[in-house]
Image 1 (cartoon, rainbow, N blue to C red):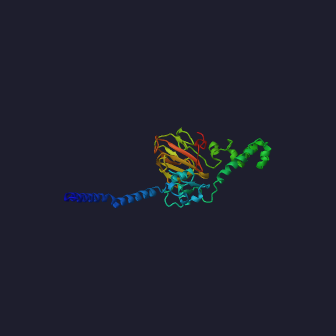
Image 2 (image 1 turned 30 degrees about the horizontal axis):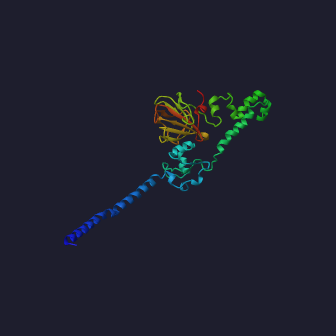
Image 3 (image 1 turned 120 degrees about the vertical axis):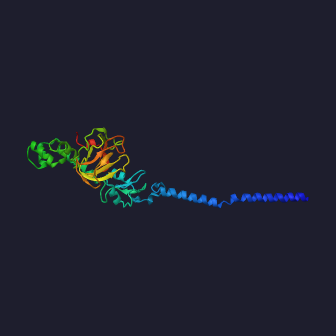
Length: 314
């Protein structure tokens, strides 16, 4: 090979070496690889911390109260739940739920977490039995047996007129079916559960009860109109944390009854305050509503009832 050919070969080898050297940096990208890896780790940890309540990624067995799932008197938290809503739907005070479940923060509950929603030692079934038993016992007293038999069962020997006047004293439930008591219809409506109800505002019903769409009744009025307690009880909630209720007040009454007053303009009572039937507790407004109105609910053990069937006729 001539000298010129050798020089060209050496030059070609040198050029090839330079090309190889230039090709090394892309394979040397450990810094880029590390940054990519660290970014991946932080991205994985962020969803884990932000979805602490989104339990699908968490073993349900590790959640608080998991051993009580499905038992009477317990509730499994669902997506979108709040402690206030859970308390309302179960007829309880949210502060009691905090105490019964040892919750360090009432605003932090996890999807899938199981909460006690009934007082320790309470029997979830007992509350429904007395109502059924009372109805069964009162039917024979109002039946067709002779007046003498009714008087004998009451313990008297007077004729039918005397038996009729003594029946309300011996069987309060039967008084509800007669017009003898001086209390009239309102007492008849509330005698079974010992709660005397009154309408919270005089306005007309602008939307009736519908168990699937409207858990109470909507009553019309003007901004600033007085909202009165429908029955005596203790205020267990005052605030605006219930979505769709605006400024709301919840009052707890005897025998597991609750009454709810929503969309208020001004609230005039505090939590744990005792109120009496007819006492002004708020002023009507349109908070979280499309017009001025009072949304009023009556609940028994958390279950919504048609207020028109509980309140006295107007």
